[in-house]
Each structure stands twice: as structure tokens, then as C-alpha cells.
Amino acid sequence: MSNSVKPIGDADFKTKVINSNKPVLVGFWADWSIPSKVIMPSLEAVAAECGEAEIFKLNVDDNASVPSDYQVLNLPTLLMFKKGELVNSFVGTATRAVIKNMVMQAVHSGGQA
Image (cartoon, rainbow, N blue to C red; front, side, top):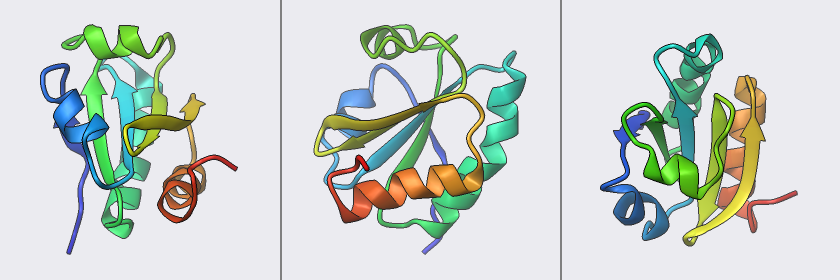
């Protein structure tokens, strides 16, 4: 079963992330952010490989509440959630290996190294 990066917003964040039974990675991005565009193919690749977790992207220009709640100040920012709790984060252009490691840590443990 192929997984992909799905868009998410302020309105459905609680339902799809906080209330999820699966670990969830959220990538915060914006159209004007070149590093956000650079990281997207890696997010897509990891989503296709890791069906045990959900991966979403949240556009900060269209959704202000969630980025404010989690103090997202730089893009891209990756936040890893498990059982509704923030368990890991990465700010900046992460490699595919770093992203996959974040997801797999959350899938197989408490999420933090």
C-alpha cells in the first residue's frame, strides 16, 4: 500500500494528528521557502516507504494557529507526534535518511533517541 504526503490544516490537525493511532510526521512549509521545496521529495519518498506512519504537510501561510501553538519559526520544520504528543523535531533541510530515522524511531519506540 503506497502512502503519500497529504495536506493538513488548522481545522483538521487535532483529528488527523493528535487523535491518530499511528505516529504522525508534520512538515511545516510555505510556497516561498526554497528549503521547503527541497525537502518535499524526501518526505514523499519516506511516506511511500513507511506505511506505519502518516506524513502530512502544513502550509504556514494558509494556517496560522498550529504553527503558532508549536512555535514554528523557521521553515521547513518537521514535528513528529506519537499518541498525540510531540516526540521529536527537526528544523532545516533534513535528508531522506534523517526523516526516515525520525519516523522509524517513532514507530519502533517512544520517538526520541
